[in-house]
Image (cartoon, rainbow, N blue to C red; front, side, top):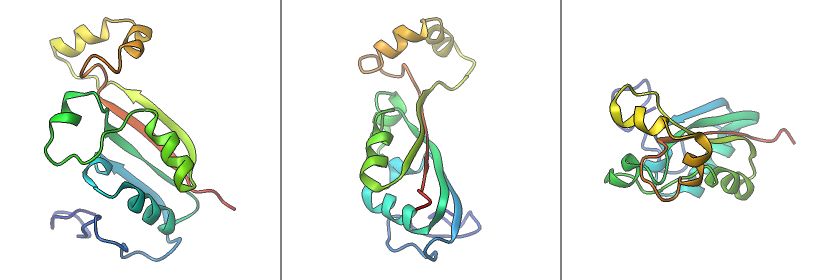
Length: 144
């Protein structure tokens, strides 16, 4: 699915309701999509509506303090590893995973950053931009 006619199905995910039936989807993957959608809770409600019980919603968003998160003019939301436990709690999902992720890009900045011990990187995550690149998340719709 994409807003542009480059995918199998064209749809603007900021328009509700989405064109899928209730409980008709097993899995939803959003790789760098959620931060582009202005209505996060409405989006989460639609995802919950169309997922089958036990269905999985997972993906990746830029880490809030990373350069790519704060510099992109089409990002409406910033996310940290603490965002998804709160989103899950407020929207009726089970949290499976929410973790910081570093892309293994082969250049000097990333090599230098990765020389810093992980415990220190975590301690500095709110102060040093681009210490982490992304947040990986996984949520599940409850079966009951």
